[in-house]
Structures are given as structure tokens and as C-alpha cells.
Image 1 (tube, rainbow, N blue to C red):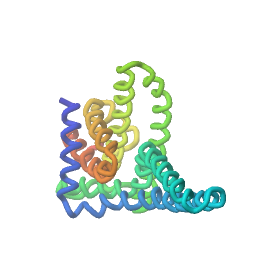
Image 2 (tube, helix red, strand yellow):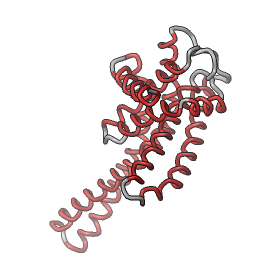
Image 3 (cartoon, rainbow, N blue to C red):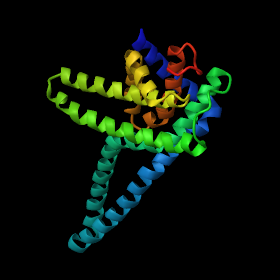
Length: 246
């Protein structure tokens, strides 16, 4: 039941975020920032490389051939950028989106509790920028380390891919729950205890996250809804939500 509870809360969170206009600014913010930091530089660099390449090919082969070759090169470059985005965008977006996800989680806690949550230590900058970004960077390092260690699993026929995906789903669930629990002041040790006690539920949430974020373009817009789903899972598993730390 724990795994299915995580799956359900993840899907309900995405639906709730999509149908609650009051949450849209906090949901679209990380998408805009991540796109600005990732795709805009890629477009500028790509345009410069394409122009440089076209100039050299024109000198060698003439204008007509240069047009066709440059078009083909641009397609190859676009494919490389898309492949890089497939693997790199989600981790980058997670760090850049940390302040927005913290604010989104905070508002979701308030909406679900119907009152003010416990006051968090530190000023607004620490609560919504400094601490969330630091936590995201720490978790990114953990994710990279675990991914490197589990990569050899892909060499195992059939079962290896499932084991690798299971490890990634667990990491996704831990990451989402880390943001949700932080929004109500749970310490880092408390967050780890919570995930250990509710590992199946967190993995269920992570499985939904892994599948949705992997969908090109669409997954990007579902990304913030998973933060809402994590808060909902926190409420479902914490009888005294939002007061007593997990």
C-alpha cells in the first residue's frame, strides 16, 4: 500500500498543480529560469558555431553546398543539444528551481493545513533561497555518486535495467520528499528517518517523477506538480501534519 500511496499522491499533486491557478506562478517560475539558463546559452552558442561552420564551408565548397551542409550540421547540433538536455536538464533544473519549489511547497503546506505551518529558522532569503539551493546541490552530489556506482547494473541482461531504474526512482522520491519536509522545518536527520520509515511510499512517488520527467517537453511542465504531490504524501503519512516533525 505504501508504494501505491506514493504513486497516487504524485499523480494527484500534478493534477492539483495543473488545476489551481494560484499555484501557477510558482510552478512556471522554475521552468522559465531553467530554460533561460540552459536553452538560451545553448541557442546562442549553437548560432555562433553554425555561422562559423557556414563561413568555412562556403570558402571551401561554395555557397550552394555550404547551405546544404550547414543545414545538416545544424540538425546534428540540435540533436546533440537535445540529447544533452535529456540527461542534464533535470538535475540542472532541480538546482535552479530550488527556491521556487521551496515556495511552492510552503504554499501547499498552508493550503492543506488550513493554517500557518511552524515558523522556519532564518530569514526569507535563507529559508527560500540559501537552504533550498544548498540542499539541492548536496542531493545532486549524492545522485551523481549513486548513479556512477549503479551504472554497471546496466550490463546485466534485462534485470539490470530494472534495478538501475529502481535505484533512480528511490533517489527521485527522496529528493521530492526532502523539499516537502524542509518546507515544514524537519531537520536533515528527520528527513532521512522519514524516508527510511516510508521507503516504499517515497519510491512510489519517485517512480511517478521518473516517468513523468522523462517525457520530452511535457515532463518539464509536470516537474513542479511533483513538489505538490510530495507535500500531499507527507500529509498522508504524518498524522500530526504540519506541526510535529517526522
